[in-house]
Image (cartoon, rainbow, N blue to C red; front, side, top):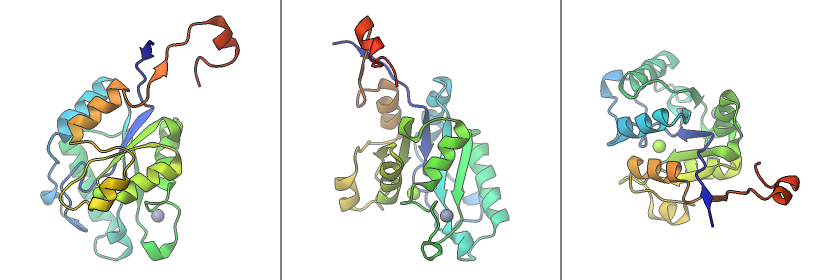
Amino acid sequence: MVFEKRRPGAVLFDRDGTLIRDVPYNGDPGRVEPMPGAVEALGRLRRADVPVAVVTNQSGVAKGLLSPDEMDQVNAKVEELLGPFDAWAICVHDDADGCTCRKPAPGLVIRAAAVLDVSPRDCVVVGDIGRDMEAARAAGARGILVPTEQTLEEEIERAPEVADDLSDVVERVLSGAEDPVPAVSAPWARAMGWSRW
Ligand SMILES: [Mg+2]
Ligand SMILES: [Zn+2]
C-alpha cells in the first residue's frame, strides 16, 4: 500500500509549558524562556510551509493579575525569541465567565483555524495538559500532548497521542505516520469522491 505524505493545515501550539516555560500569570517579558527544541521545531514547520499559531488561555487578565498590555509585551517577546506566528488566539476569561474560548472549550482552535482559513479537522493542537487535548477533540483536531513535570499521569493516559518533545511532534506531524492517506489513483475511486477531502 502506498501512503501519501499529508501535511496538516496548521499546527496550533499552547503557549505556557509548551512553547515557553510556564511562569504562572507572567506579565514580565524578561522571564520568557523558550522550551527546549521550540526554536528548531517551529523553524522546521515554517520551512515545510505549515502555518503555526498560538492558542493560549490567559486567565490572569480576568483575574487582574496582569494587564492586557503586559500580556501583549510577553507575546511580543515570544515572537522575538521564537519568530512570527501566523495567528494568535487568546482567551482572557476565567472559568466562571462561561466563555466558549477558554480551553477545554474548542473556541480558540476554531478561531485560529478560521483566521488561517483551514478546517479545524486539518489542524494539530500541541499542548502540555488535558485541557489542550480536550479543546482539540472538541474542535475535531488532532491532539498531541507533550508532557512536562506538571502534567498529570491521568492526562497522559487520556491523551490521544503523546510525544517525547517538540522535535518528536514535528516528526509525527511531517511524517503523517499517524494519519496515513492512501494515494488513490483509480478513476472509479476519484469518481466516487475518494481522492481528496
Ligand atoms: Mg500549557
Ligand atoms: Zn474565553
